[in-house]
Amino acid sequence: MAVISALVLGLVEGITEFLPVSSTGHLILFNEWFSFAPEFTKMFDIVIQLGAILAVLVVFSKRVLPRTPSNLKLWKRFTVSVIPALVIGALFGSAIQKALFNPTVVAIALIVGGVFLLVAERFRPKQTITDLGQMSYGKAFAIGCIQCFAFIPGTSRSAATIIGAMFLGASRTAATEYSFFLAVPTIAAASAYSLLKTPVTLSGNDFAILTIGFVTAFASALVVIRLFLQYIRNKTFAPFAYYRIVLGIVVLIFFAR
Image (tube, rainbow, N blue to C red):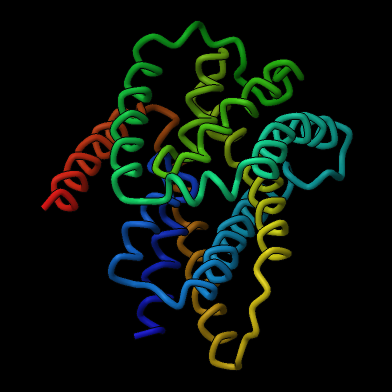
């Protein structure tokens, strides 16, 4: 059962981390049926997130690694964007987890986020940012502030940053790429902080389960990132918005019963 849980949860993380549908929300829901001991679950969630992040580094290795002046400029903007999440996470992260990590909050956030995705598609301003090099520090900071809404489980870090970037004038492709890249420092910092606060003694079997989850999340995220980038070149986020709304309603009905 532990191996099956690792495969399922790794797959859920890899598929949902970079889509605007909330990986945390899906993991909370799937943990109703597939889960581990509480302390190990925290460690497992961190490891599979790192697997998904590795997929970004592989797909965008030429653009995301700070080896050129243009890439270094991008990383300066990512640094500005990640500051609000670091501050909010350090001050209120634990309190938010205790208060909001439950299926009802996830369902409501899924629905609200879906509505905002539809609004972003219909009322977004003129596209002034088609390349990430055009992103100003002010807009980078604004996206970072908007990203903080993702502390509410079910909101989706990806959805928050994509919607925020689109409202600030970014094209779908630019908004999505910025969301992918920003995930690297954001999740890496959150994972490092969580690891320091989550002392867990691991056995050989635990390492095997973590490895299965990591590899599954990495492989599935690799496929999803590439397919998603192809999809958004000429299609909208509307299907993801409708999916969020329908899933949120189903979750509310299920847990109400």
